[in-house]
Image (cartoon, rainbow, N blue to C red; front, side, top):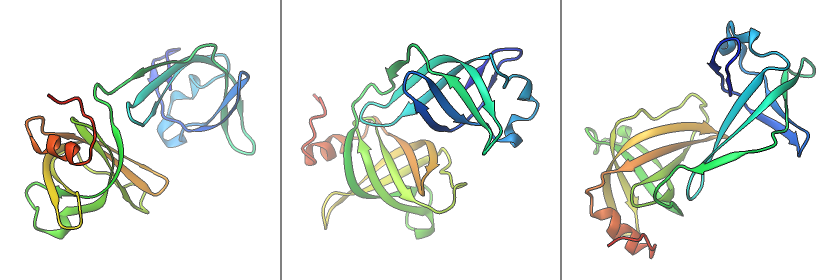
Length: 203
């Protein structure tokens, strides 16, 4: 959420709910992070909200609104006017295909050590990258941006190892989602998609 007056700030918050065409309810940002920005979180201020929705294409949505009210009970919430227009655009140039493939993230300098591996699944995949998901009870868990190898189980006896790089990670509802970009020069990606009978538009 971006607010430009009296100073330009960006704050993270959480969607609580909405009444279509009337208002949107957001959780008041964490007081520890808000700091001295309480003077911008006031009724009448204009906000620009942006949010991401994962999926085959990955989309970014944005809208402009105003703060209608700030509640204090039962919790502190921001009430925004429902926007008259919501804009969106696709983030990925290459379509992601939904999968459920068992896989491992292996640190490139420690591939044989089980302590340097993360077990999970490939939730979606394209010629350019994939979304890797694993379970965790720790909301502070993150996967650092670094080079990795992705070992994907294609059948009971076969697997492929594809080099890539971690671009981002986030925790949500007991799961950590990791965005991985493949090495574009790796032919194994094409072979893997063909093995999965996915039309990737490859020449």
